[in-house]
Image 1 (cartoon, helix red, strand yellow):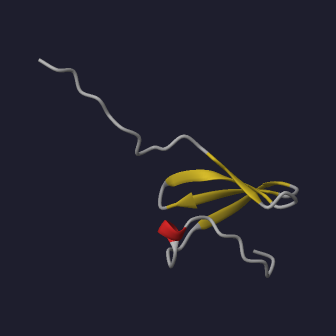
Image 2 (cartoon, rainbow, N blue to C red):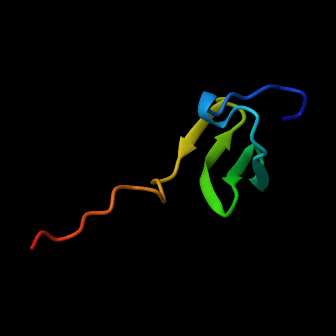
Length: 61
């Protein structure tokens, strides 16, 4: 990003990610139709969003 490498995760290595500018220095990172988190360029951190793949509990009978 801007000729700087930002490591998101080794799990995502080789995958195409979408990035969208939200504000100055803040970018939304997406994979397919799922928003993963926000990159804050100045701090060079990724603030994750709650996982859309979280555990689903089904009631026990």
